[in-house]
Image (cartoon, rainbow, N blue to C red; front, side, top):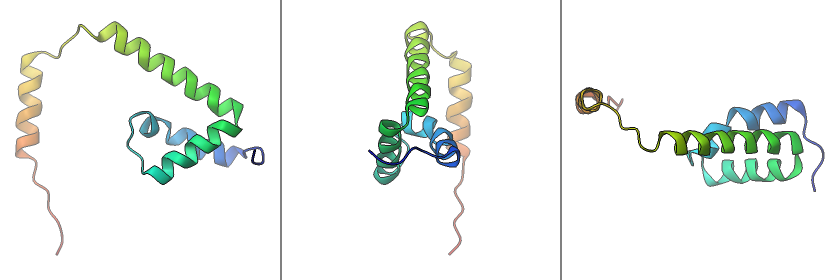
Length: 87
């Protein structure tokens, strides 16, 4: 395994943990986090806690649905959003 992680490395990993859980990272970033978690027990423990919490929330809220008025406001906002690019 690699050297023990420094606190700066752990902070970097923990800052990206939510994006990692949500599969929002590049493959290279995800690989970096996986490798770090395999070598760093405190970060792996934190990952496990976050994962357990996500599963608990999903299980407890599975039957809940957003109110239709909220869904319509979100759809309207997304529809009105304009992306401006320089070029």
